[in-house]
Image: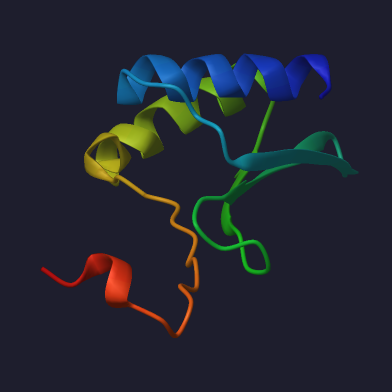
Length: 96
């Protein structure tokens, strides 16, 4: 993870008051006399991230992320990960 990605992760964890374990990626591209910043948040979807984009300097981008997290109320979003385990056909062990 890059330095800016770590900083964004810290902002997210501060806003949501929890640990963010999803993937995230920060992309920056120069545009004219500015920079386009994009945060890709892979919340519960591995394929399609939520994208937050901002044009400006890095400090403004970080503040934008902080405000967007609060505006979108992402501190109330919870995701759970579950795995399915298949049991044997013989269920007699569980009969009472």
